Image 1 (cartoon, rainbow, N blue to C red):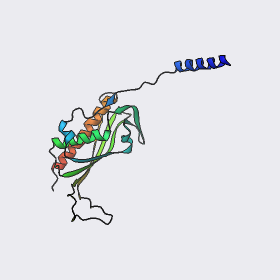
Image 2: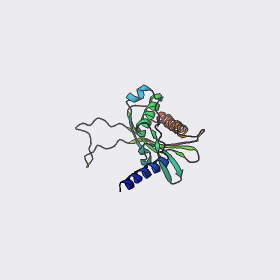
Image 3: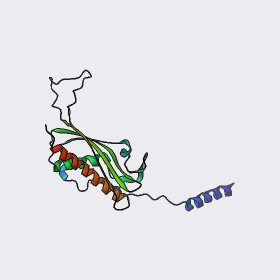
Image 4: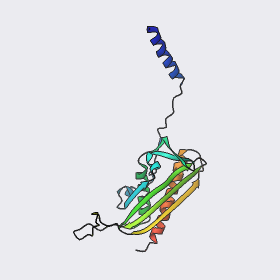
Length: 194
């Protein structure tokens, strides 16, 4: 009995030694290394939300028309929504956008494809910021103050082919496409009549 337990342990070690270890990537991708310091302390009311698949922390790869796969080892350094919010604020500062507006941002696509494309689709909704609540503020039957009217609602799509292989190239292309979408929004915002 004693020898059979020893043989079992030796077999387990032998089999374990034959198995190849899974390589783990400890690198993390960031989008905000070049953001102006004032973007971290901005006064803009930016509310950014992501499509659910983008909220999982990994770089997302679209493998077919209906299949998306977040990477397990190739991950962002912090919350993707926080990093993209900083990019939006950075571009709003650059464009000298009005601070008395509320900016709702929905990121529908921020992913690569198996055939080497970087896809970004972003929707923006702009409202006037609500006035401070007073005793004379109108209230709905549900006890809420009414939403301010939408001043602008528009989507932007920026796609590009990757010029190099790898996740770093994909993340750089996604960032460039996202900045291009926000810059196009900022140009349209400057033409907004209030």
